[in-house]
Amino acid sequence: MSQGQPRRPASSEQEQDAIRYGDVFPAVSGGLAKKPVAPQDAATMQSAETLAFGETIKGGPAATMQSAATRNERMGVVAHDQATDVTAEQGVSVSETRVPGGRIVTEFVAGQAVGHYVEADDAPTGGSAATKITIGEALEAAGFAAGTRPVERSDAAAIQAAEVRATGMDGNIPGGLAAQAQSAADTNAWPARDGDKATLGDVLSNATAKLVADKEVEADDAARVAFAETRNKQDVTAKPGGVAASMATAARLNK
Image (cartoon, rainbow, N blue to C red; front, side):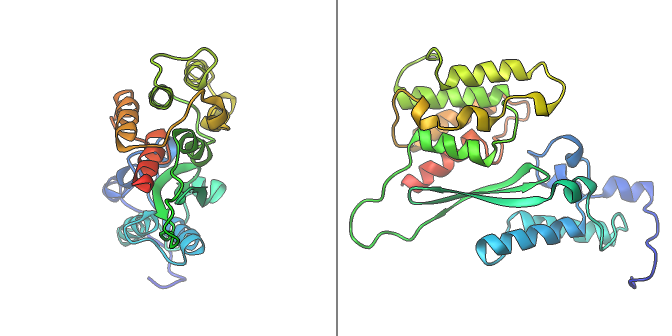
């Protein structure tokens, strides 16, 4: 299609066949999930990944978005220079949280996490063991990565499981991290606007200091937290950039 040639309106059948954000990123919710992936969204994410990593990630969010946008453009659902309205307004971003032994990277589209993974630092050459990530540090990383997202019941359940694993104490500790998360989730069930809700960043900031005891993250810790989080979600999946994802990343780094 030439640059000056107008795009023909997409038929209702083409609109139905469009690849939407919810199709390629199941954790995405709200209005974004229903939006067709647009070429300029993919181009912006490619730029963000290149700035962060020096290249686009094979099989990562940018590649996924490019594939979906290319198909949508071929079907005539979107134009080559088109961006999704919410993405144009809120943008895409790549955040990095440094942890002992590496970094946790989370990619966002319009404020929603679409990718979450770890990059380990080069192995130390001096023969000394690398410092391992604790549960408190993993929770702080989750608070940074998904900090603006309102606390939900699945988050509270995951935080409670993490606190139990860190302290060895069953049940919520009065005034502790899990109690704060549960209170936030209960309160968040009422306000109509997300801006009025307590966020993961609010609850998990300085998580290490809020825990009465802490320990290095092990695979079993991550598994227990993942079970608690997914058991309390309707789609039974862990959220990218959430508590379970951060714990899983920490367990991999600690191996």
